[in-house]
Image (cartoon, rainbow, N blue to C red; front, side):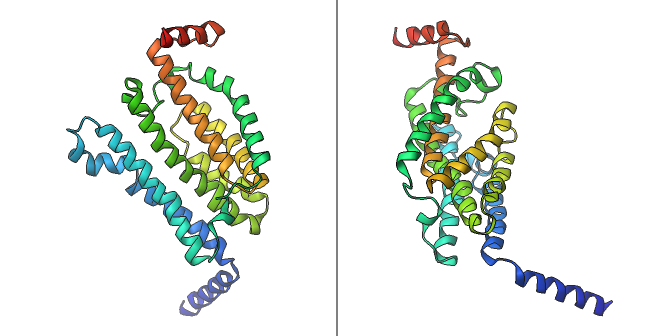
Length: 263
């Protein structure tokens, strides 16, 4: 038995030595980072361990979201950035934190956003979206809270874009080429589970499209602009529909919303 275990261990060590150190670290660190996010920098953690300290505050819900935004900025951006700089000895800019091909990036970002607009308009007419967006309910009643929330959300979205299209995609691209686009799409989609089904299925196409955009431009900035603007638009449309009670999808609905808001 001892000889058998020794042989198996030596075989395992031999295989481990053949692995790409950087690739192995990226895969393991992604598992660790997402676990840290779920257990320690999430709204769930705040609700269980910290909410009682802030529940009497008028802005307890906003504090909860900012704990999540700042916490996951640490998890999804700071932690991998530290690994890149001190373990891989590489530049953060090599992982998409740069302007890249800005001409192509801005054009594709604008085109993608314009294509998405009618789909967002229709999607926000469904109760499944109306109940969820924006996540902070008080933003429906106060434009100030809405803007503060959206500013924090942009911070979170930058880190979210970096962990998948920056750290994971560019980190694995040297080893896997274009297959890295599909690899980073898997956890990206899984972490959409629990959201409206249309959004989760849409995340499959979005993950691939944003990955292609990142590789094409050499930057995560344009994916961040698209993702951030889409989420902002969903939140804004949801608030406008909530405030006006208008959930149609035709031209008259757009007119009625502007009439009620401006009037």
